[in-house]
Length: 537
Image 1 (tube, rainbow, N blue to C red):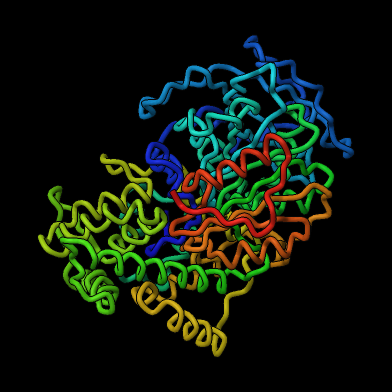
Image 2: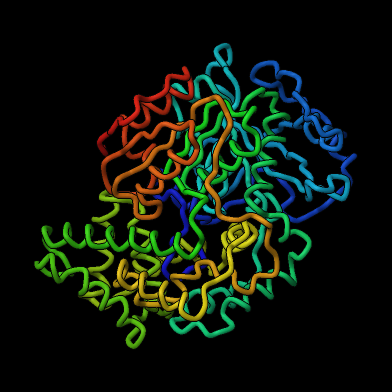
């Protein structure tokens, strides 16, 4: 995570066992090369099938209308036992890994290709198998491979019984040409600073351009959506079945726009609307975290002990004052590192993703810092969120977040009166969480000097698919506010909104009622009744 006050839309409320993995806490991917290695398009047709048997006979891939893409659509995935990750304590013996070749540039497929890391957990009841279910955990920058590998039982029940559960790493992420532009020491400084200079964004942009100039122009979400269709074809599925969370809803939306005739059963949980420009998107997201911070503080004062006191009206301000005060009085930790204001804000905001279930732990960590002057707990939380292990190494693809956002065609940044109006709006809607660094809150990530962008523009994604899409929103979601779910449902034109009442980011793991409705839709095609509300467990 690169932001000082993180707003990455990664579903922190998935499960405790997978939280570290989904937040890029560091595991070796089960497929892909790990480096950009463009090859000729002809190589895509020469993949050798694995001797490992498929759970059921795989239908012949459907191919594509574009002759230049047929070698990619027609490839046979070479499934093999996944390499064991020593950091993963789960039983992954049943999982199979493969590498999918996709064009580096879809406008010129013959110029080279990328290797996409793919993993599948074969259907538990192969005689009842109905196809593949693609999964995306969010981000941008979340690893679908880790989502499956670190939680192989996470979808046990109807979904795993009937589907092969398939995770993949999007472009720029982990096993698919990962982007890691700064060395560990430089990233420590870059993340923890409480006084980012005017060249803070340029430092990252220059480092990424120097290392990954060949790949950066092609990591946009629309290209990843095209990769998903190639994967659908290689898996032998006529239609795409998909469960995307958070940023994964944007990926799923673009897929529905790009390939309406291939839409099968799509579920978009923790919705992001593509029609909102990035700066306004950040203001609305900051307002979501402001509301969540106040909800946490109001709950804290009802508990004993609470480091925020007993007055619900004063508690949020007390917390923000403490966090901002670390700029002048940072806390030392047992290992000699320093808890800066930036790191502390990262820790607190990251815990707000988890809703009420994360509040007790946050209250305890704040107690150690505010009452005892020990910043170790908060720093450890920030490290985990940022993908930093105990040896000081950053894992995963920490710069995919910036590269993908900026490649998605971030609009020109406001300046002059427009910039002042945006800052005024931000201060009015999120005075506590944005006060630490207003400009970083507006420009998250900072695409103002990023060297590569696509031609993508903010727009209402409308799908011509005849199949209904299920959008899931949570009324207390801080990272993807509920209003976005309502907005996306209306924009798609063929969607139904399913609502979870409660705090925290995304709904599938937080409500048995939501999970049952989603599972029934994905397995049987039964669309939830419009207006359905579910409680949080």
